[in-house]
Image (cartoon, rainbow, N blue to C red; front, side):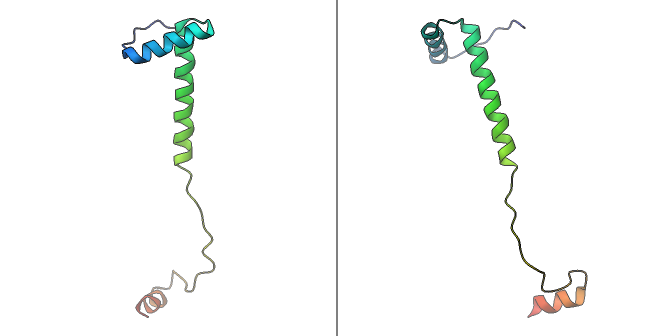
Amino acid sequence: MKRTTLILEDACMEGVRELARRERRQISEVVNELLAEGLQRRRQRRRRALALPAYRMGQPRVNLGDRNALESLMDS
């Protein structure tokens, strides 16, 4: 494990202390758990954001490789 110094807002630190006191755990354990949960949630959110819906469009009405037929269809 690495040691580090964090600068936390007073309200966050109070919340962490209260949670640690209530669960009879060390502050570092609670902070590690909360950080891991937050990171996991962000990873899941990022994965979900990339999923796009797919729709069946049916058979094309014209051969898209046939430029003249495509222009004719677009003009009508």
